[in-house]
Amino acid sequence: MAEKPKIPPPGTAETAKVALARMSERERKEIRALVQRALDERDLPKFKAGLLKLGFDENSAAYEKMMKL
Image (cartoon, rainbow, N blue to C red; front, side, top):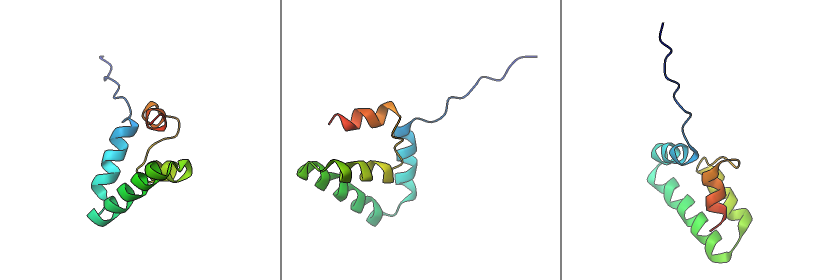
């Protein structure tokens, strides 16, 4: 009996894409504005809040990459 191939869980970036697809255009604009404002102001707590709203996992490699911006 052959084993079924294991499907890896979706990555953080994929989770964020799915979350964005489910949001209204207004919600996406608000989050983009929040993240951009946080970058402009160099406000790390706002930036983290924006990433979390997008569905990023704080323990993922993608999150770590975003934090290095």
